[in-house]
Structure formats: C-alpha cells, structure tokens
Length: 68
Figure 1 (cartoon, rainbow, N blue to C red):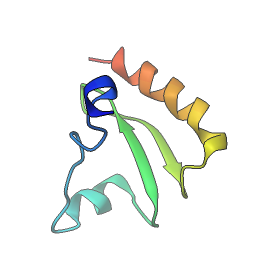
Figure 2 (spheres, helix red, strand yellow; figure 1 turned 90 degrees about the horizontal axis):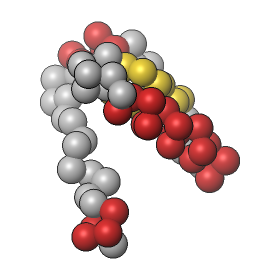
Figure 3 (tube, rainbow, N blue to C red; figure 1 turned 60 degrees about the vertical axis):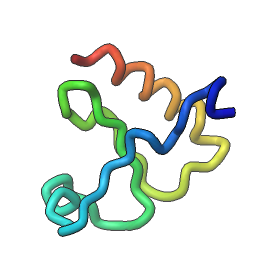
C-alpha cells in the first residue's frame, strides 16, 4: 500500500501549543485542511470525512497542488 500510494501521514503537522489552531480559526474536531505549497489554506472540511466527501476532497487536493 505505502509503496503504491505513499504514506498518507507523512505530511501531518503538530500544533503542540494550540497556537496554529487558534490562528487558523479552528473551532471543532474533527476539522481537515488542505494547505497549498505556498502555505495558504485552500480548503477546510468540518466534521468527519465520509465516503461521500472523497470526490470533493480529491478535487481540492489536486487544485492545491497547482498553487506554489
């Protein structure tokens, strides 16, 4: 799996002091963000990611890859 698709957790970030979360406007759990190469948040999803959300998430991930 990892060889074929890569490690989905390789690019996770940690916010030990909670400061980044406050700066980003995080207000609930779970929340997921797509962050482009230039550091801008291009997509925010509030709540669990369910199968019905995957198509939109994949589109947003592809779109974020074009931002540098």
